[in-house]
Length: 186
Image (cartoon, rainbow, N blue to C red; front, top):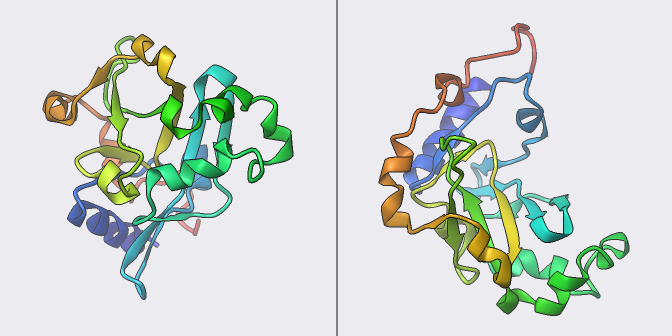
């Protein structure tokens, strides 16, 4: 299993994404279904969405192909016909705004909690392109924000992220050998 994680991490790195893993005891690690498909030579990402103004969090039931556009992945939650019935009411403002009325953000990893900053992502870009040059811990969680509320977030351009990538991230993020103490897990 550890060898698989190393190969997955290397494939992500080849695509320009710095993929980090948590120890096995972390919930996010246990929930992660992201994987590299050796036969297809592609990454399928576990994706989570956080609709900030609605206080709704959604984890995709299926992992998403790295070549899928971010906008297309998001559309099913913004289209009232495709959206789960129980989410239609909480997401009604997002659905009314559509993809043109929202910003999708990705948190810059390694920032102090008191000074979070975010990348603004292009909805027409593929997941692979959106994650290029970014640090991802286990799988990406995208924040979906109504455009009129985007000014409340510290958004940086990708070129500015150089300092963020040098920010200290605990070493266990990059060591897939770290376990919860039981060596016979997985």
